[in-house]
Structure formats: C-alpha cells, structure tokens
Length: 375
Image 1: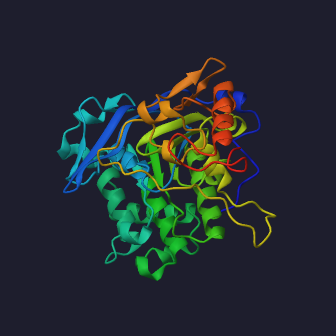
Image 2: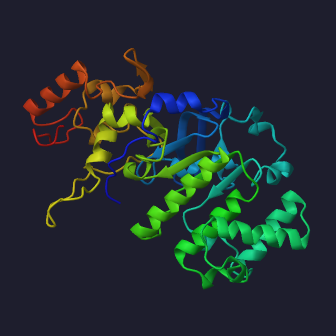
Image 3: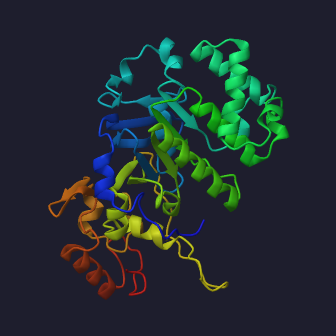
C-alpha cells in the first residue's frame, strides 16, 4: 500500500481530542509475555505500556516478529499454553483487571467487552457452518435472542458490513465467499455485541489493495458510529497514517516510539520509525527504482544481549547503545511524544552521533554507514 497524504484523523487534532470523551477504556502496564521453548525463553513482549481512550484508535506498527500480535492476544487472553504473562503485568479494561477474571468466565468477555478481527478470515471462521449460523449462534448466546430475532439481526449485520444480498449470503459457507467478503463476515461477528474495544490484527494482510482500502474504511466507519475504541495492528505506517489517533511503534517486543499521529509523522524521533517510513513505496516513483529496506535482520529475542535491540541496524548507534537499554521517555518540548533512543532524530545528540558515524564509515555495532545511509 502506498503512503497516504492525509495524516491523523480530522482537520484539527486538538479540537478533535477535546470533543471526544476521554474515559480510559484500556490501560496496559509493564506487559511482559514470554514463551517457553526448547531453544530457550522467548521474550515476545517485554515491558509494554499502552493507553486507549473511548472512541480512539491506537495504531500498533512494526515488522513481523516485533510482538504486535502476541500483545493483542495477551489482551484478549487467548495465548497458547507455552506462553507466560509475567507477574507485574497489568491489563485493565474499562476499570476491570483482566488478570483477576476467572478463566471459566473469560468467554463472557469475548464479543461483549473485547473482540478481535484476525489476519486470515478463512481460519477464523468455522468451515462446516454457514456464516449466518455462526452469527446467529453468537447473538443467541450473548444477547439471549430467539431464533427468528437472531436471524434478523444477523442479516442486518451482514448488510451493515457491506455484503450484497445479505439474506441470501446468510446461508453461504465461508468457502463460498471471496477473501474480502469473508473478512467482512469476521468484522460482523466482531461487532455483533457492540464491544468496548475492537482489536484488528493486520485485517488486510491477505487482501488486494482495493479490498484493503474498503475493509479499512469499513472498520473506521463502524468504529466511529459506535464510539468504539480500536487497536489497529499493522506493519505498514501508511495504513494507520489517516486512521489512528495515536501510534505506538514496536521493535523486538518493546515500544520504541509513541506519539499522537500528526506529531509522530511531523517529528519522528526514533531511527527505526524513520526507516519504516522510508520503506513505504511512493506514488510517482520510477518503475525501476530500488525500494528502500532496513539493513540486517530483526534480532533474536531468545536471551537477547544487553543494549538497544535496534543498535546492530541503526545508523546512529554508539558504544552506549551496545551496553544500555534506552527507556521510553518524553522530551520536555513534547510531553506526549515518547522515544526509546539515546540519540533521537532532530536533536543535537542525534545529529552528532550520525556525523561521527559518517566520518568513521561505520557504526559502533560495525554496520557500514555512508552519507546516503543517514537521513
């Protein structure tokens, strides 16, 4: 997907935030999720803090393996058996501490308080049940509707998500529908009980660009009409540019930059965020132009070495970056903009670090640097 020109929702972010209800729907503090594997302990999510207010959209961005989906599943409480949410992690939904919810009652959270749209609709729908029956079953269980009322509401949900001839499609099986239609059905399932928080985990990954745009617009329209909070998980900053109120950039299980959308795009601080932006294809690029990429590979998160996890790939890396792990901190000039970097972009320290690396031709981690490498 190409970079969008519109950044941030609404024409005046200050007025927009002021008009919205500021009740906090989700609070995540020091979330740590580790996996026990034969190869060792995988620190998939390592100390994440998040806030989502009512009616707001939080975009979570990062490469594959950065911990985005694991974090989303931890909030939903659908982690696999070998995952461990460490003591001290805290997830509060609308004032309710999810860690204290009886496991037998977790199913009463799903759909009513929390809902999720997964990456692949074919694997999240039951292949041997019609889509209408899957919707009706959800409505009858959570809303205690009768058979006729549940069917009528299910057909209306299919209509709301843009499925043509909803009464006819009610009797279709998932394999009778296209990928875009299946994803619309999963969205209908997710919003069927009007959840307080909707998590969309890369909902357009398997879809073509045109259908991607339609699905993202549908999610935004449904979220705004119901004043529902939403977490939009993606690897593409272009997707969240015009749809999220705030953005959190994740790398190696940690949030490395967090800010209101307009502020993040106007004043990027972390080199990883800048690298993600540079990797987005632009409209008007020559057909044979070489696409930008981030050098190196994502880090191994089994017993990671000390220091900043992005240091081996960072053009600004210094000796300090190899020994200490930076904390997510806000600058005095931008209290809502947090960055986990010792040498952030747009600062004197960051400019000096990059100048030294260009002169030396290499970073402290040994990565080659040239003037073209550095923004």
